[in-house]
Image (cartoon, rainbow, N blue to C red; front, side, top):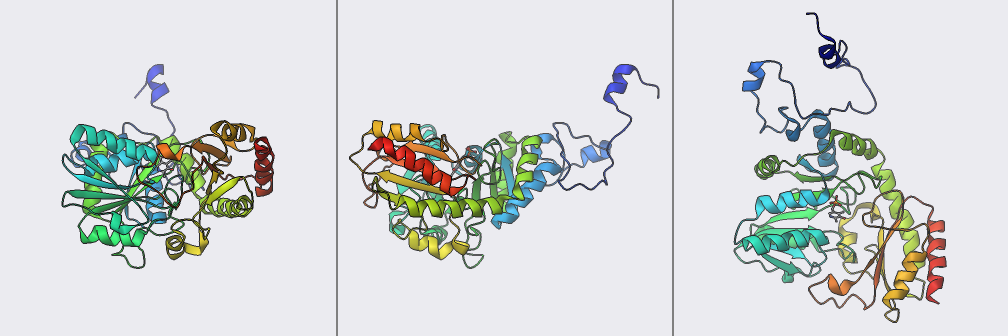
Length: 395
Ligand SMILES: *Cc1c(COP(=O)(O)O)cnc(C)c1O
């Protein structure tokens, strides 16, 4: 068929062959997916995880990354979302209905709490806060549907009694969702705490952090081992139009190969920093799960493989310092940049006022302003020097 120039521009004479082998998988970008014929159209099963019918439901590119993430975390089924918080939204909006009760640790990732508070106001969902270090504190009623877990917890990095909490949730038939961003599937297997029945029901992972590793991509995932639960999440994922860009997926896929090397390297640098930070008189307390003085250290030791401990460490300044002092300290850092998130090449610092962030009393935390350091890929000696020079503004 002879084509007009405009048509020829669109229907190119050459397409890449299917069989070519490359180190990275080929990238599919799709809104439309072209059906071979009407038979294929009428026989499509978009509710099957691996059928291709439209871009929002997935492409070989998104399924390849999802399979990879599920495998790393010890799960079977996966869904990708455009950010970690979007993955959290998927879980909350799928599993919670009017009148239900949800339990969250006091050190939960802040925006998850805000999301739940919003559901509370609009749908009468009861949000209950528990102390992650005390299983008895989690006392579900018969309306409880979901227990959120986070290990280590956000900002203050307490390591919870994961096994105790999962056992209790299972005894009450309550679903468990673990925010697995800190462990990244490398520090421990949330789907097998010693045996496969001792397992969380689903993990949420901000792929924005370690899997991306670049500080430049946003993405999230929800992984399960249970087909029925996955199907529920899958339907919600579809009707909410939650999907990710193939280009972003390809970037995360490319970074996965080096994830464990980066994770272990950053963890090692963080331990070096931790040991130095502990000796500095300006800090009243240093928070890191691998440190014997940190809350939940024994649980961390029980669960985390090979001393895995990620790249975060927080310090609480001596309570004599004023907010302006701590701001001066943060502003004087040169290598550490002031910004949210972690897992990228650049070390980050963030300043928090704990009093505004916690609901319960916490006797294990000293009074004072808290600064969290997220360790990047710089040499730890240079990072120590940077903190050392910035501490001089406190003199
Ligand atoms: C960053 C983060 C998230 C959210 O991920 P985004 O992609 O930034 O939305 C969720 N949970 C934890 C623990 C995180 O650190």
